[in-house]
Length: 146
Image (tube, rainbow, N blue to C red):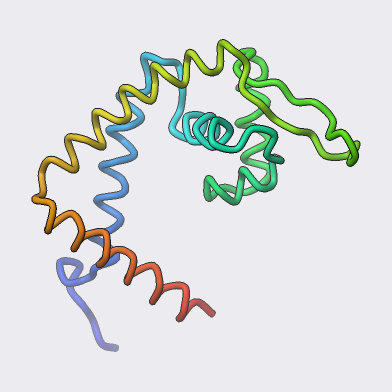
């Protein structure tokens, strides 16, 4: 068996960065009463009003059952409304309510502060290089996935 130390495993470093980002965003979103998946769903709905739950799940990188739970919780808080599609009655269109827009605006302000602080850690050149390198990671991993 060929072993590789954790310190040399790029995936380990990616996971640590993802966990740190998730934990930080969870902490800054807490005063808004939102989880990171709920915030992601509201952000996706703001950019794509009327999107179906299945399409939103794909956008947010979660399973459709998980997204349905997220949407139910948001609907219970009156942050979203779900109405039957005009032509496809079995598809529910999901949109932000006024309260949902207000909660998202406040939460997004907090999340953007994290993103700006992260971006400020790097020069413009380093940021572009990091984005490019992460994109290469994604491309390779999608290519080698069985």
